[in-house]
Structure formats: structure tokens, C-alpha cells
Amino acid sequence: MLQGVKPSIDLKLAGVTKVYPGVVALQDVDLAIASGEVVGLIGENGAGKSTLMKVLGGTIAPNGGAIVIDGTPYPALTPAEAQAHGIAFVHQELNPFTNLDVAGNVLLGREIHKGPFRVLDRKAMAEKVAPILEMLGTRFGPGDAVARLSLADQQLLEIARALSTDARLVILDEPTSSLTLSETQRLLKVIRQLRDNGVAILFISHRLAEVEEVADRVVVLRDGHNAGELTGGEIEKDRMVRMMIGRDVRQFYDRHGHKPGEPVLEIKGLRTETYPHAPVDLTLYAGEILGFAGLLGAGRTELARAVFGIDKVHGGTVTLRGAVLPPQSVDAALAAGLCLVPEDRKGQGLFLDFAIAENIALPNLAHLSDRGVVDRRAERSLAEESRQRLAIKVSDLMSAAANLSGGNQQKVVLAKWLAMNPKVMIFDEPTRGIDVGAKAEVYHLMQELADRGVAILMISSDMEEVIGVSDRVAVMCRGHVTGTLNRDELTEENILRLAVG
Image (cartoon, rainbow, N blue to C red; front, top):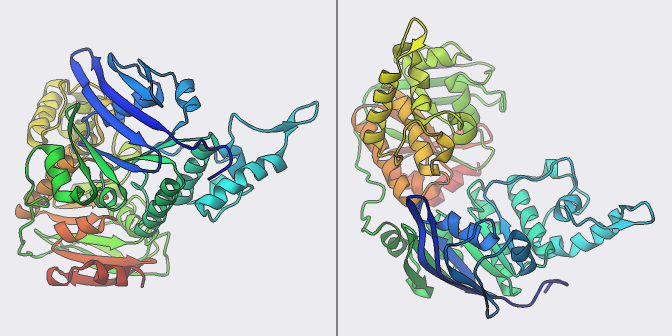
């Protein structure tokens, strides 16, 4: 046990209720967690997980119920009280201070000073942080620059910061959403180690295989209510899915075979800025879903951006329906019927401050305008059609896209491209950070598009997703396509063998 870490915690949420105007976010929710256990918290977007975390963190006060810590009930907590009780968060969105070193980030706001002028005592700070990093088995030290850390290392940095506050309960919110398979396994190993050292872990994830692997108990929320709890051998994916969405998903991936048509997209000798010495050849056929697998840094996203005309290329051609696309011309790609759904929907797929209707209309403004003036009625009509088609859960299409859940934001990104009747769609990590119900809807949409003859290239780091959705899978390693697997060859072992070259 780390020096300063409190030995145990007994935390219960008893009948917690939170009501916003017109919305019941939580209704009589119970949750218990004790030291030395990992509790998985799962549910669709909008189920109440985020609200529950804000109650625990003290950023919002419940309207009813109690937070019971070590036998003492509290009607609400402040952030300072939550921290004083040893409750710490590792959020999905990492925001480290990259201009500081590791020790400076871990002890931010609690720096150690010396002398009458209170200069930073970097030696003492390093000595305080080093045992925490040693426990976590990090590959970086107290003096290393945070700007050089990988995403996986930044996740461990956030955990180190939590433990440095004498955390007794660490809440992990989607901690593996941006990690590779090997980095995920490393993080899950750290979680088990923390549990074995007596720390309580609340693990929130949409990746149910990871929940199944690491959780001692699973608490399920649905529509702001407790939907049930699973322990031990009861924790398996099908049961979790049924409890989350209230129905059986026997065909989660909704997959049926597609007979490929003629070649639609042909990539020949394409060399990207990231891997200029690795020419890529790839053919995509009408009406097929081609999965694109590989480890983080393999070059899949870079290839997609080059094909779509965003990034510079160092040679090769992209041919769409017999016509060679000019390099670095997104306009030409769009005009030919090629669309890209980027992996970073917030940073690259949406204008979060714009209205939902405005986001959907953006690529189609030429068809929705008259002499440079947008026809707002046509814009709203397009948005309403998209809402109904994709079941976008929103009451006001003129509200900001930032107000939507992750799954509904992804639907808005899809809606703006679908309105252009694409011939080829590139999906880059289409279900990252969205719940199981929204994932099933995205899979169904891809199948529907393929049935209509649209050619789909799906980049995904979720092995189960790649195998479950794809007709074929191409695998990339360090800029090279190392092989293509047909449907009857799709196994995790075969994909990983090609992914490591």
C-alpha cells in the first residue's frame, strides 16, 4: 500500500434522485462499492452515468437520497469534500499540462516549496511521485516531459494524480476509448493491481468485453433507474446488453453477406506523408464493407485522410468509378461521391456551437441556398428528415450539437454525409465512445448502405467489431497493407498476425 493512501472506503448511494426541468436524470438509484473491488458501471448514453458521477464528485447536488461514506450520510458533497473523502476521477477527455513535467502534473495545485522565497522543491516532488509511478509500473519518470507521453501513458499519469491525493475510490470514465489492444491490457493490469492494494475502482465503459474481464460486480443503469446487478460468473456480454437496453440483441451486428459489385474505389501506389516509403494498393467494391484493422500508428487514419484529399501524398493515385481524383482536393472527392466520417467527431466532424440543423446542412449549402442566402425552411426540412431516418434523440433541431450525447453527435455527423447520397463512405472509428444501443444502430446503417450498393471502408480498433461487421478485412502495419482476409478467414489471431507484420 502506498504511504498516505487511506486503507478502506465503504461508499453507498441510497435512493439518489436528480431532476432537471422536464427531465428525471436519476430516480431512486442505489450503488455500493467497497475497498478492494472493481465495480463496472454500464448503461446507454443518457442512462444517468454522467449525472451519477457528478453527484459523487460534488459538482451537482441530488434532489433526494443520500451519499453514505463510512457510515455517515450526506445529502450532497462539494468537490472539496469529495476529494477529502478520497474520491478521485480519471476522465475520458485527458487534459494534461503538456508544458510541465510528470511530477508537476501529478502534484498540480499541491506543489512542494522550499526556502523563504517558496521556490519549487523539484527533488522533494520527484521523491513523492516516484513511488506512485513505481507501483503503476510506468515507463516514464517524475522528470519526464508530459508532451512526449503516449495516450496510454497519459491515462496512467491521470491515475497517478488521483492516487497522489490519497484516493480511496478511483472512478475511471471510458479509460480505454483511445487505447490500442496492448495498451488496454496494460491498463487493465494496473486496475487489478490497484484493487489488490485495497483501492476501490468504479469502471465506466462501453466496451463490454473489458467490463467482463476486469469487473467483480456490474451495476446497470437504464433511463435513470437501476436495471440490475451482475456478479462473478453472471457477468457476460449478452446479459449486460439485455439489461442495458431492455431487449435481447441476438444479432447485435445485424450482419448478412453482401455480394460485391464492380470496383468503385481503387488505390494504387499511394504514399502518405506519414509513410512516404510505403506504397498502398487497395480496392473497394460496391456493396461491401471492408474492415481496416491495425495497431495504433499503423497509418490507417493517415491513408483515409490522404484518400479524401485532406493530407498531402507523395505519389500514387486514387480512382473513383473510373476517374482519377486530384490529390489534396476534398471538393473533388465530395463531388465524386466520397465521404469521410472522421474519428474525432467533436474536433473534426462537428461545429459544436452550431445548431444541429446547421451541422447537417453544411455540406449541402449549395443545394439549400438561393443567391447565397440559405433557405432555412429547406434546412429544417433536411434536418427533420435526418432526425427521423437516424432516430436522433433531440427535441429541438436548433439546439447546439454540443448538447447531444456521443451517440447522437455521431448520428449528426452521419446525417450530413448521407444527405449527399455518397457512393463511398469511409468510417474512421465509427462507434468509439458510444453506447451499445447506438452501436447497433450504426451497424444497421452500414448494412443498409451496403445493401444499396454503397462501398464502405471501416477503420476500427475494436477487434470484435471488425470481425462482426466486415465482409473482408485489410490489415495495415507501419504504412503497409500486410494482407487481406476473406470472411471465412476472419479470426482475431489472423488479424493480429498481420497487424504486427
